[in-house]
Length: 532
Ligand SMILES: [Zn+2]
Image 1 (cartoon, rainbow, N blue to C red):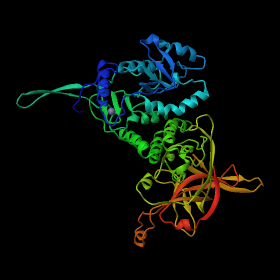
Image 2 (image 1 turned 180 degrees about the vertical axis):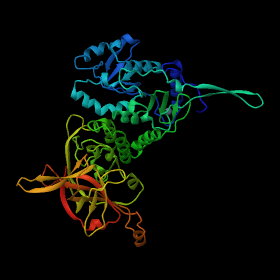
Image 3 (image 1 turned 30 degrees about the horizontal axis):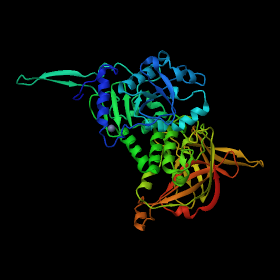
Image 4 (image 1 turned 90 degrees about the horizontal axis):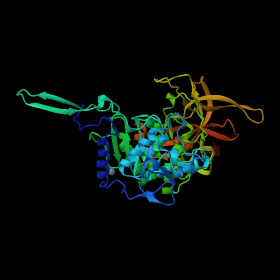
């Protein structure tokens, strides 16, 4: 309970639109928010016309204007009205209102109430049965959300048919409480129970919308967003986040999105790693769309930096980007490697990844140890930031043979403990990408050898030869005293490789590795290798 303004009983009540208008009015004076001056319209946009009978699809050519964008869930049904190669011509004349699914109708109502003439909705503005149109438009989607005057988030609508406007649950309705003091003075306060999921949960946990990989980018790039949650409307712009009852929302995710937007503008390299970290954390359940769903942000990043994109990483900062560390894999029961991304890409695994961002931002001296000789990355369609068919890195660097062991031990959480050992040295820290298993491979000459591959299963105990490729050193060599105290000042970072199961003289990644001193670097031999 808390002191409260009032919340309308239904999200279509005039009070809700007044709330949105008030926020818009306030936002126009925010120094941190983009001015509503209009932007390049998307290739196709829905022209709302004067009434529901005059909706049409407008193909633009360098037009400037203000428009809304819709962030929503399609749901399981795919039978609702969409633009196809055959319906394109018809829709350019007229889109039948009565055939539009409810979520789209509601979004159009909201757009009209805001006073805008255009709305961008993917299923109508992208030709759904044209693979090439879809792939080309997918790269521009980030820009479309970024340029939109406002994004409407159908946060609690599980599909396109369920609509945006809902009756608020009774429990979230404000109640008047009366009481009297001991000297007989009567008081009344209006109190409201905060939506159970409202605070302090991150905004993206507020409904089914949050379960779609694509909405991360839609949210992250939008200048302003109105989230239609079950309990109330939440306003979010780059300067404030406010619930309908007037409460500012101090929500981590707001800080995150704002932070990401600033990072992407001011320090794009780090912005990218922060983004990948948050994105991978959120999209634990996605694999196939993992790269396409952030292709808009990747395209935006490339424009800003001129860097070359390789399967979710950047060629120019590859030595840093390669040393991602996987976490959360142990909770997942999915076959690894079902996505066609090279093993060195974080997109090749389920679960979250992290980068040692602090190490890179805090001005610690960094020394890289590898030379990238060549990077090849082939995408499987027309979206240069989309699905990857294959990728190969050729690198010359310090390679150290070590023993990978699984002796059957599980940690406190029931997760297999893998260790790296070598007789003459202290074991480095190992961060496996997934669970690992040993498999037998036969080379072209009938010779058999053992290697290690990613798996989702609990393996039988094994020992196998693997290799550490040392990528970089961060920090100064510690003093004798610091070494004695085991001060964590030097870190040698690398990746762990196993012999490829498919190609001779080629390796694939199975994990990341770190060590506290550079002694492990001195015992490694410089080799030129290929990683797929
Ligand atoms: Zn604002």
